Image (cartoon, rainbow, N blue to C red; front, side, top):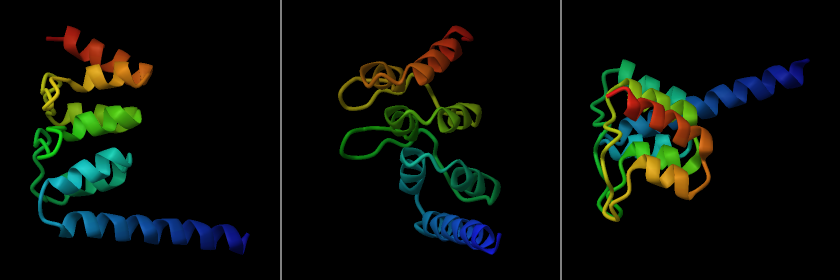
Length: 122
């Protein structure tokens, strides 16, 4: 039983360290990193904690927004969170792809289905 408590405590500590390192970076590229790795808690902490996050900020190399990165990795929970806080599902990267295009190309069917349902809402 003590081993489980230790492991859970270690997981919480590592999560907190990740969140602090993300927030301390001071720019929205940290949101891209959290989205890529599926760190819902880190994203929530950035938003709730008042950190400046631009959910539609595109990176310089590929033009991917956090939504693109979450879709690429199949992180449906992150995709839903980003859309819920205002991510533009129509944003295209430098290759002309939306997050939906990326989800389809990489076989992330659950993400693609969600994004299609969101597009139909508008």
